[in-house]
Every structure is written in C-alpha cells, then in structure tokens.
Length: 327
Image (cartoon, rainbow, N blue to C red; front, side, top):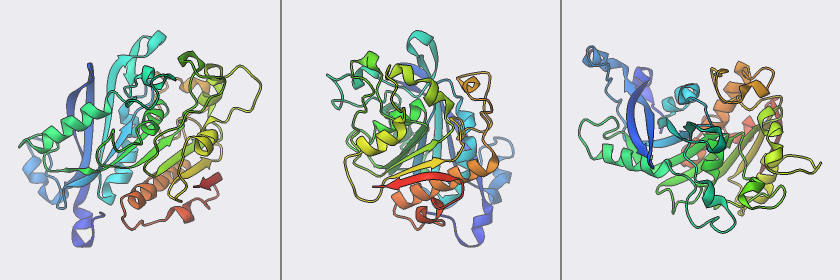
C-alpha cells in the first residue's frame, strides 16, 4: 500500500473538490490523493496534479462532527495519504433538529429508535458519497477517476460522525467496508429516541473497530443530560466498547489518550462554531495529535492487511495512552 523506492519522495498530498447530493442535503467533499510531484508542470495552469503511480488506492472516509468544518481533518489526510490511501472529507448542510441547520455527517435519528434499530443504515450521506465516487470511477476526467478502490473502504468519524461510522459497521450497508474508527464517539442513545436511561445500543461490528477517546473530553461530559438523569458514572465510550461490539477476534481496540479533549482530532480548532467553548483549551498539543494520527494509520493499514510501519501493540504503550483494551 505504501510507496517504496525512489519515487516515494515524489508523492505529494493533493486534494480535488466536488459536490454531491447527500440524501437531499447539499454537500461538498474533498478527495485527498497521492499526487505526482514530478508532473507538476502539467498542472501549471489547471492546478490539477496527476495522480502518482499505484492507483487505485483504498479509501478512508472521515465523517465530520456537528458544525465542524471538514478542513479541520486535513492534517489527518496528510498523515494517511503517504501510506497509499485516498482520504475523503465532506460537509453536508442539513437539519440539526432544534439547533436549526448546519454541518452534519448525515444522520437518520429515526433509524436508532427501538422500533427501527438495525433495520436500516443511520447514515444518510455515506451511500450517496460512495455512489458519487463510483460514478467518478466510471467517468473520464472526473475528480476521482481511477483513483479509488471501492472494494477497500475504511469509515471513520469524529463525534456525531464517529457515531454514524459505528452504526455503519455492517458491510451489507457499506460495500467494500474493511474497518471503522471513531474519536470522541459512542452509541449511548438519547432518551428522547425512546431508549432507557444510559442505554448503549449494539452495532453490527462485522469489521474491526477502533474507539479512540480523550480523558479530558468536555463535550461528552456536558452532554450527559441527553442520556441519563441519574448520578452514575458517565463513561459512554468505554461502555460502547464493552457492550456494543459483539465479537471477540482481537481486531478491535479501545485507546484513551491522557488529558485529550473532544477536539484533539481537529487542527486547527474552529472556535467560532460547534461546542469548542465547553473545553478550556480545545486545541490538542502536537504530541497528542501525532500519536492519534499514528494510531489511526496503524489501524487502517492492519485492517487492510498491509504491513504496518508501527504496530498498534507498540503504540498503545505510549506514555500518552491512559488506558487501552482489545477484543
């Protein structure tokens, strides 16, 4: 999957932008891919740098948090693309319920009610995004033509986007799905949807799952009223790992980063939007972000059956890891 040999230094991360219809909501996406530095002269007027040799590449989808602009995940694309994948980020503009409209990963809340849970995908933008990329693959001159291997897909997300990713862990709903990862996300479900107090709902989890969290997550702490009114310990990420994943194959991971907040996966953090004000200093330090990128990269490569440069067994022993588990 990774570039090797003399051409490795010729690969640069480039992005191509496109729009798609996210289940009735307008959406904009960016596909990050390995570009060929040696062919920059061809892009002198257009800015469209040709892809490097090796396409098509596996696809990593990063689903955004509520009102978190996708540019904040660009650093992760820069971390992952040199390993030989494409990364797509997006923002759909849709309903946020009582909060009006804004950036959303595309989430069908009705699919999580007790009556409908497990009967259909909760992701409203994921299918249209994959359909759009498939259409590009068949169209000469389209932004992703020939770049993306839709038989190898990893779906990840942050916050609400991570929850959507977790509920999309069934290859029957996401063809080509190989793995799912999430940061600052869980499947404890709001009581307003008809579930009981502090109820964690199961996910299909037919592929490897990585749950990442920070011990200083102020957003999850501030959101407990959505899920419970008791005085019990509120630890929905760890409970999701313990209760929502049915299999025990040794390929799913929980990693908690010491002191990291809800927006550790974001760089830079946009303090004008979303709920960054719930944390005193939402920006993660570079060491936390670097470890987070290494963990995701190692999980992606392992899930795609590629040799990982740094294995997860080594990374979870890092000083910044407060707790980890495997199942």
